[in-house]
Image 1 (spheres, helix red, strand yellow):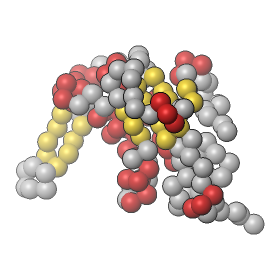
Image 2 (tube, rainbow, N blue to C red):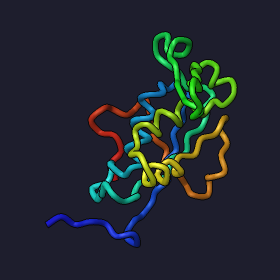
Image 3 (cartoon, rainbow, N blue to C red):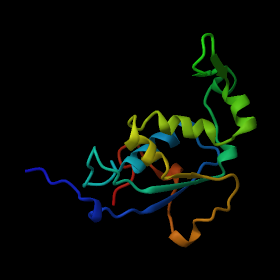
Length: 152
């Protein structure tokens, strides 16, 4: 029999990731797994039982290859002929955190649950952030291997 986690049984942990010289896609996969709660044995697909993630040094995140200049992000205004495009280079000038946020958002489920889970992602430029009192566990990206992401 499958056991599902109830709302009052959810325990959230805080994690901290330093994005200095990290690749956007690789960081986004780790973040999305933590935010969804897939790193826990109690993963329930229809509930928000994930953990909080604080990403610092977001302005120093990298893209591989020529993606920083050539990749395109599309959006639509809703009007006829209203398609807009931008590159990560232009996006980085205005909002340094937006490229990572879009990557994580597209790895989460659509709808109300995905939007709620995305609020657990906190991104900051520089080393300082206001979540020191939560005592976040530090995830060192260079020490992770692909088989063992984050296990509680």
